[in-house]
Amino acid sequence: MIFQLPEFTSAVEFKQVAQQDVKNQRFLVEKTEQSRQANVIAAEGDARAADLIGKALDEAGNGLIELRRIEAAEGIANQLSKSRNSVYLSHDPQMLLNITGA
Image (cartoon, rainbow, N blue to C red; front, side, top):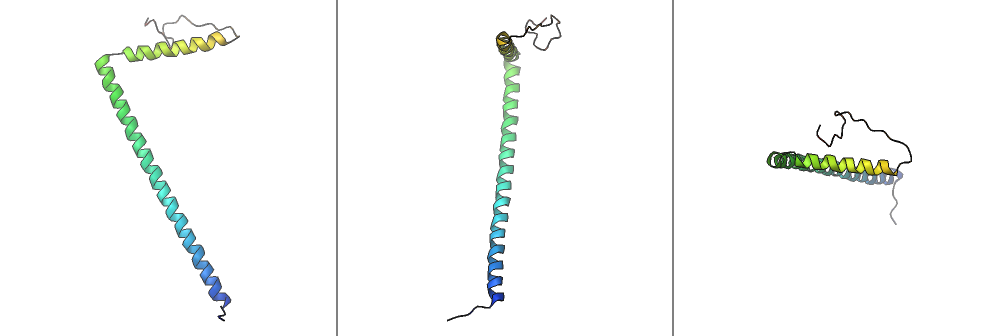
């Protein structure tokens, strides 16, 4: 029968806890690195999308922007039509959704 000293048992337990802490820290470092890489990839994708939109606008003109304005105005009008409140819109040509282009 082998007897272990309390100091030896304590040292073994301490070593096991330290090893678990190292594994946890490595996991956190790996997780952080993967998150950083995901952010870089997302930013590159956003930059590429912006570049493609810019090129499309250069080639096709402002038709897409006008279409988006009309779609936004249509959505706003739909929401306002469902409201029980009275809503008055300005005829000011500086209005954000000036779809007439005036």
